[in-house]
Every structure is written in structure tokens, then in C-alpha cells.
Length: 257
Image 1: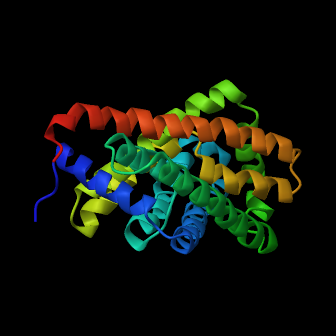
Image 2: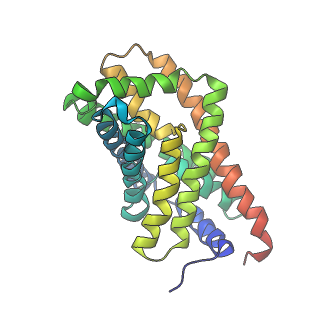
């Protein structure tokens, strides 16, 4: 079976959006927890790789760290999981195509957002803080990354969020267009690797790294964390819903079945 063309990917995305909007509360909650946890484990791998490398390696260390982060989205899209940043593209496309209601859209986003938080906090507390995997020899990197996130300010964090989810949702889009496991992995890997390498802000990744830094004793307040959540969440929403979802929907709407 051959891979899909862009207009066919759009049709597949709409069907995915319908299925996500119709998911039961239990299913969305369990998969949302997994989604938050998988992204956090990918970010934990990034911290472990970059934090353990000599400072002199500079951007090469970041490149190597960015190369391991995408495993989180691979686990979600192939293994199973719900991630709010992906749903920021998929669910609005189904609504714009008049396949789901606004209430169904809002319900999906609410459940998945809340359970992504739980999954991210779980990994940050138990694996990061309790086991100590974000502390010790990599503590400096955990704190530096988190402080960079919260110090960006609303405007820069918002715009960074747009760039991030533009790339994340392109990874989702390309995954939907591939039929083989290897094709899906390649479609996911490079857009995700690029957003991490650039340094864009991802709301679910931030749900992990900022609390991990706070629990490790960083000079960051919970108010700063929630302010970052709002700005990056809104930016991610625009990046996914507008720069990928709406763009492709209106580009290929004449070819919809």
C-alpha cells in the first residue's frame, strides 16, 4: 500500500479528529496520562544526554539530545496515547470540516490537557525527583532549561509555542500519511528533532521540566510555571490549529469527499 498524498492525509486527519472527539472519558484519560508521560520520558532522555556532556561540545550536545527526544511522540502515535499538542491540529480540522461539534472539541481538549498534566507530573516527581534522574550531575541542565522557559515572557513564549507546534503537528501529519512503521517513525522523527534543536517551547514538555526544576530547588515559582503554561498553550494552539490544520484544510477542501 502506497503512502498518502496531502489531500488524502487531510481526509485521514478528519477521520482521526472524529474518533478523538467521540472517545470515552476513560479512554481519553488513560491515553492522556500516557501521552504526558511519554513526552516527559523523551524530555528526560534529552536532559540526561545533554546534561552529561562536556560544555565545550556546545550545539553538538543539543543535537544529540534532540535526536532522542522524538521517541515520546513515536510511542504516542504508534503505541497509543493522546497528546494535547497533536489534538490542537487534529480536532479543530474535524470541526472546521463540520464533522464534530464545538462542545466535543472542547471536551477532548479539556480531558487530554488535564491528564497530560498528570502524566508529566508523574514522571517529573517519581523519575525526575524521587529517583533523582533530573538532579545530581544533570541538575544544572534541568534548572537552566526550566529558567530559560519561564524567563521568556508572554510574547516570546507565545511565538515560540507557535513554531513548536507547527513542527510537532507536521510530524503528526506526516505520520498519518505513512503506512509502514518505518515510514511513520521517519515522518515523526525529523520535525520533532528540529523543534527541540531550535529550542521552541512545547507545553507538555514544559509540564515536565519546570516542575522537575522546582522540586529540585530551582528559584522558580508555581505562578511562573502557570504563566508559562498559558502563553505556550495558546501559542501551541495557534501553531497546530492555524499553521497546519486550517492551512491544509482550506488548501485541499475542494478535494474532500
